[in-house]
Image (tube, rainbow, N blue to C red; front, side, top):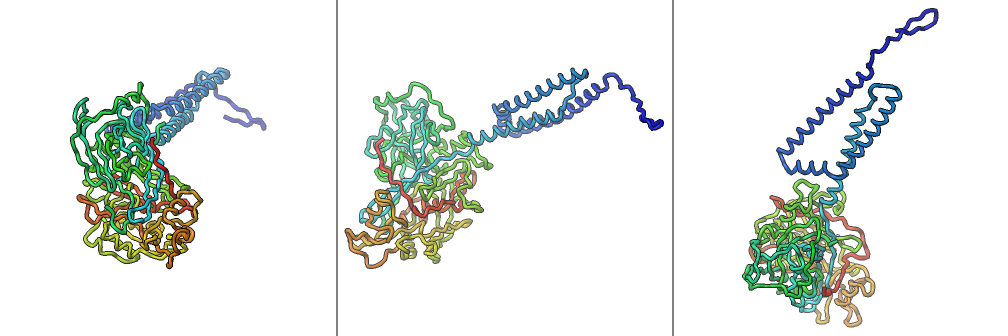
Length: 602
């Protein structure tokens, strides 16, 4: 209240009631806590609703709030609250106030922010540790001679896994055309098996001998035996159950190229075998204490006691990890995708993406091939591109087979698929596989003259495969190889190289095998006459006629397609395969690099 008298302003102050400031603070605090109580009650009701709807979600929430990151952030916020509260008490004592003045809304907000920050840190850490799992793949290319002197090559992409406790490392091909994990057994003593690392069941604390239905095999008891036939090769083995972890531990048709195919041709043949026992000399390899390994899955596998020389003797990889659909496996427990996704070996950032995996095959040594479980990596796709998915046909047969609506070569539509065709996407095949009847037509339509001694111009004949929702387009750089004339005057296909490789390199060795100069595309004049005509480019296709239950007109989309396109496999209730143009690093000096690695005895 203000009064002005004679130019002098006088103020009359109303005496404050005792404890009025303290009462206001208490009222304010009560209001704030009442409002926070309502928010807390709503949050608890939400958690209760989540628990009733899905117990697993509640478990994840409780696990997150019980994590070390959230606890540390909460304690940090609580410590800041205590420090602030102590300072306000000291300040109120100096001012002789009955209650300290607290900025509760700001403090509670800061405390919540700290807790949410810890929750974000925990979620990020959890996504890194338990999210999609990627395995780096290596490539091996083997130059060979066929029976009639045709020079060709076969290749394979493989990665590392570990089996058992403590882990035994192996290198395996991740093969979408088969349904079992196959490893050479210590009981296999052929030259093929001895050139690879062999699986010791006794060296694992958690391994056990089983029959196909999972029944344990007792000592001195006959047991089940299986024979698995691939496109090239065959194995025979017995069944074992053990822990498997991704990553490291701590007859030929004329005119056809000879490649390698690990496409499983049937559901495998079962037999009964006499007792098979590892030698006592291997007892020393049995561990004396448990090993610790996280992210593993209990998987039933095939321990091979016999392996054919082709293709296993020439390649560095030890075994095959089948990634086919469940029907291709003996039981669900043999299928790696089903067992791993069900056991939570990885989680996915994509809804229902635990049964998905993406495959990227490199073209040069400057990039790494990779397989990613639990989703895919957009960094391997051309910027702006999207995945185009095609539905799998007859998934009960176990193959990643798609409907083919037409095949076009050099702009000409072929009538080969007029009555229907199929295409199996197979990561275990090194070439494009076609039926013999189609192979002859492709050679005739796609043969073309080489340009500057190389096969790589995008303007030359293309091969197009219509899958309905997506069309696979292959340029000569993807499918063609140089044709040369050997000493007998016969035409043959040689591996394509576009730049002169260094002396002693794998590519140079490959040229020496073929007698071809990569820089000029002409035959070496040291041992043969100069050809009268410039060389031509011919398609490198593998002639293979697949038996039932596969469609008689079935193509195999192998390495050439998987290099051109980033491929995603989805083994959900409605299986499908997605394609997107792959993003490769430019490497003009090495178009098709090779890594010829000798198979050492390990």
